Image (cartoon, rainbow, N blue to C red):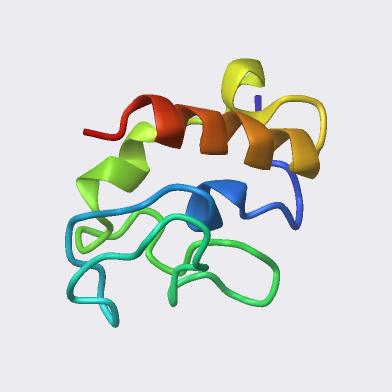
Length: 84
């Protein structure tokens, strides 16, 4: 599966606890990453400074669903299920 155009759910919905360039403390769930461009693509994709967590988010039906809205719901559910 390829990333859905203009989605960005994986860059908005989850919390990221590791530093991100421009967000040294990471980001809370629901906040867009500062590295998300106007087309909802990651500016750090393929670069070494991209957080390791981000590389684990691979497009797949169980993560992305059938729409952008469903992707947000699935990722938000994972976020709640993995909270300490």
